[in-house]
Amino acid sequence: MELSVRNVTKDFGGKRAVDHVSFTLSCGVYGLLGPNGAGKTTLMKMLVDILTPSEGEVLLDGVNIRELGAAYRDKLGYMPQEIGVYKNFSAQKFLKYIAALKGITGRAADKKIDGLLDLVGLRDAGRKKLGGFSGGMLRRVGIAQTLLNDPKILILDEPTAGLDPQERIRFRNIISELSENRIVLLSTHIVSDMEFIAGEVIIMREGGILKTGAIDHLLRKMEGKVWSALVSHEEFHRMKGQYAIGNMVQKNGGVEIRVIGPQKPPLACEPVKPILEDVFSYYFGGDV
Amino acid sequence: MRRKNDIISQGPSKEEQKIIAWLRKEPVPEVPQEEVQTVCRTAAAYYTRPQGAGDAGFWLAALSCLTGGTALLWILAAFLLGSCAALSALTGSLEAEPFALLIALSPVPMLSFAIRELQYRDSSLVQLEKTCKYSPDKIYFARLWIGMAFNMLFVALAGTAFPRSGPLLKLLFLAFTAMFLMGAAALAVMSFLESALPLSLMLAAWVPGAFWLLCQDGVLDLLMGVGTGILAAGAAAGLGLFAAAAVKTTKRLYA
Image (cartoon, rainbow over all chains, first blue to last red; front, side, top):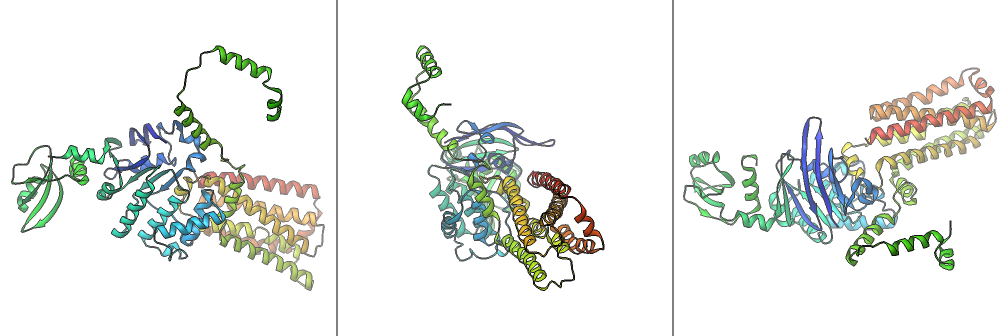
């Protein structure tokens, strides 16, 4: 199974949100990274056929997803950034409604819903009204609805936003279990989540693709470009304009920083093992 | 056209023999086994399952999407119509003309359904619905017709129970016309305002207003004096309007 994005562009009036993007996804977990306004959500909406590209096409195994229509949607699980729900519905009832729209009804739907509520840790809250759910609980309902039809293609827009650390770990494990024989594309602002879940990343900037590749490969390429240094506050402010700064921690009256750049900065520092956040800082610098 | 069994018993037809002979003459490129299998798997996965409104699963999905609350509203509406009919039949002393009551109450189930549909509508949910197998616009359209069909059933059943001062057919045509026209008006309001409040006001104004009007001296006599054919044509025109409004509203709500 291959999901190909060919030369896809999306314009909103005079503004270009996605600019001639092309890539191909086969089974595996892919992360979509980029600052706000990079075009991630617009791209995802075109992948799930909510938005029509202004140019280009999205193909599943060589067939345009618009032509496939219901057959494509039957294979799809989508979690939008903002989850809309019927607030007067219980979680169970809402999932039953979405299951019906996905063509799953009767006992098969009930069984699936019970299993999914268990999976996302909402079994006890299944009969409660969604209007009283917290943001994290709603996202868990969102994750459950995504999996109702046992989708072969999962498109998840910010799935971990609002989840507490325990829920994030649970979610990461669910995705890891599901990744076999499926295409999973997810975007998140929590770069460390991406490092745990995704095998490859697609980095977007201003509507275009800046970089794609396996996380291991990107990290290897960053070796020798990340340093750790303990600097004074004055030095830190001076460096901020000159270097991409990753993590910073207040320590011993100074600031411990991760400096990212092609060359060693002119101060006492040690090379450290790069992490995905450093890759992000390297490409986006001040945008982060 | 020949059946499958005929082909087995009689062998290939003349046209098929021509194609076979042509294929034997023309060089056919060799395709690796794996490629053939991939194409077959793809075709099998995509094209062997029904995908449209002709699919029984679609109607099952549309019915499943009707919530318990909607069903409850319909039961309440049916109960209301049934109670009025029974009360009117048993006592025979209801001041109100049962005929007028039925016509005034006939659009209640449909309007209640429309109000409920809008009350909990969420635009971000529409995006989610659009990614499901069955298009939400088609499901919504189907639900409107299921709602109308139930409404017609309730009115027809209540109509048979009411004591009548005229033929049943005329009564039903009049009630159906009121139902279709009010349904079309409700959908038009939904399409432009996307709010449940105007619909609730419409419903609140319609029932007493229509009832009062129909109870005025001579109004019902005037209506009963109209020929059955003209009343049937009026109902058909109302149905046409409702259908057009349903198409337009669905398109607008799910654009």
